[in-house]
Image 1 (tube, rainbow, N blue to C red):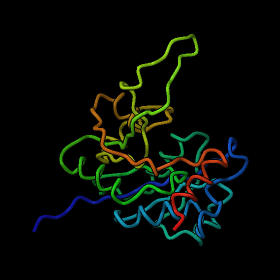
Image 2 (image 1 turned 60 degrees about the horizontal axis):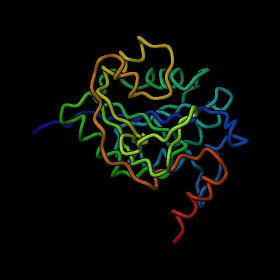
Image 3 (image 1 turned 180 degrees about the vertical axis):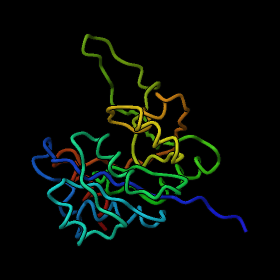
Length: 212
């Protein structure tokens, strides 16, 4: 009998929501909190889920969240991910990192990135085409056919993700850290519904996706 690689997911929910105007991870979305939706989907495809929250929220969220561990975030996203990695068992084979602010990421997206790593990739990220016209600040339009928008969850071989974080200070994207360490990251199909809640309008868009 072939044993499947162990998969763990780190959910990053430690932001203060400055651009949104509050802690968006705790807002209600169609009857469930944003963070709860993200954790529930991750639990479907993972052997365990670690959630990273603001330090003052660890006690309350440990009692509320259905997760293997709830840990305090750091001063940056990368620091928060590193704190989450510290709670993932050493024998995990694959680690996914997901932003709680993307509560509509489906299990199908997780499956695609995990399958690529199971097949031998160092890492895999979901992407979607850039549909807006992009203009450089100094003038001129960028050829959007050469661009892709990166989403989460992102999946990585556990030892490579840990090593990439151990040798870097900060980054807004885990795939960038792994690539900077010299490894190739595969792009897979994301989903247009996998919106990131950054502004109030984004929450309204997510509500629309969930409407019956």
